[in-house]
Amino acid sequence: MRLVFVHGINNEKNTIESIEKEWWGAISKSWKQIGLTPKPKPVINVAYYGKILAEATNSGNDQAIEMGPSETSTGYALQLLSEYAEAAGVTQEDIYATADRRGIPRTAVEQGVPHEGWVIAFADILEDIFPDKGKFIAKHFLNQAAAYINDKALSAKIDKTVKTQIFGSLPDPAIVIAHSLGTVVTYRLLSNEQQADRNISLFVTLGSPLSVKMFKPILPAKGKLPNPPIDKWINGRHKEDFVTLNKAITKESIGFDGVIDITDIVNPDSDKHSIVQYLGSPAISRAIYDELEF
Image (tube, rainbow, N blue to C red; front, side, top):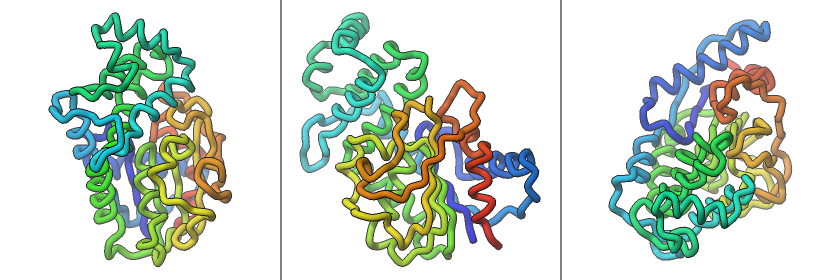
C-alpha cells in the first residue's frame, strides 16, 4: 500500500521532497504523541503543481482574467470570490471603500471588468476587510482558486500533471491525502470514469472547499460516492478554517452522502488551514494509521 499526497495553495516554494518530509513527519509525530506503535514509512507519491499555479496567478502575468464564459474561461471567478466575501460579512460598501482607497476603479468591482491582475486586486481588497481570517487566505487561496476554477486550460494542465504523478501505472491500493485546492483537483480525477478501476482504500480531504457552491459546476455530476475507486472518504475541517466556510461535504454540496465529517481538529496555530496541524490531529492521523497496511 502506498500513500499519496496532493498539496493545496501557496506551495510554489516547496518541492516534492519537502512536501513528503513535512507531511509524513506530521503524521508519524502524531502517532508517537498518541501512543501508537510506529509503522515503517511506505512508498509515498507526491503530486506537485505549485509552480504551475503560481505562474498563472503571478501579478506580473499579462493575461487578462475573463469574467464571462468563453472557450477558455468558465466565468466563475467573480461568483467564487463573492461567495467568500458574503460568508465573511463583507458588504458592497466595504468593497467600494477599499477600492477607492487603493485607487482601484469601481467598475472592476461592480462588473468584474477583465484587466491585468483583477483577481489579485479583489483578493487584496478582501484581505484589508477581514485581516483576522483572511490575511493569508485572501492573498493566496482566493487568488489561486479563482484562477483554477476560471481558466479551463490551467485546470486541465494541473489535472493532467497530478494524474501522471500519482496514478498512471502506479500500483494500488493507495491512501490519498489531499489538502485545500488539492482536494478539488483530486476529487475531479477520482470521480472520472477513467479511474473507476483503481483501488483507493481511503480518501482523506483536509481543509477542503468542495462544499463551496461555486466549485460544484466544475465537478462531475454524481448521485453516489464513486466506489470504486473510493472505498472510504473522511473529510477533516477546522470550524475556523475559512477555506471550508465551515461546511461539511454533503449531498447538497457534492451530490451524495457518505463522506465522514471530522471536526475534532486540534490546531493551536493561528493558521487554521495548516496542513501540518490537520495531519497532526489525532482523529486524522489515527484514521490513516488504521488504514495503512503493508
